Length: 221
Image (cartoon, rainbow, N blue to C red):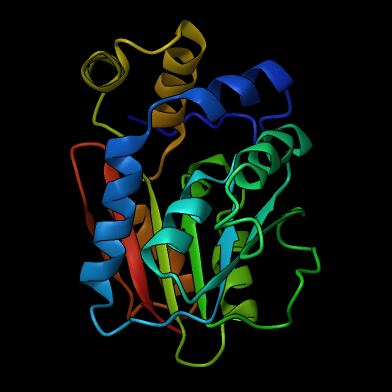
């Protein structure tokens, strides 16, 4: 099945509200576990950059998993950031360790010039030019820093996409099911991500399936 792109940004406030309230417990906890498996030696993270942070759930989970880190989340949707700041601001243990900022890849200025770790969840499939993610990671990660990306993985057919939506989002609002389906159609395959990494001179990165609908790509720059 050929890739069918979708809009790069989720700008609608209702869409952002639904995402902020959705149950992503299983995939987002899996993100943390997959990061630990990829980098078992990482204990103290320093400054972490979360690219495409959305409403901040991954940023918050990462900050809780690594209590000594400070996370800077970047997103191009002000609606998503609005809900993210509400969520983070309501947790006194996190509000001083998470900073959510507006920015569009690749041309944005983060709070720091370089980061000890760069992470990203479910951003890659939104990008018309996936190289903007890999080039940004190379630019902002310190030499030898871990880079960890998790994203959806395009299924073999539209029927398979429907099956995945029913299996994993059947009880979610219709808007979320609609977006999940189209995100699956917009996602990249493993071989496509490997080709992107070769072009970015990151071909030493590991690329593998992490579930029936997710892939991970990771390595040190």
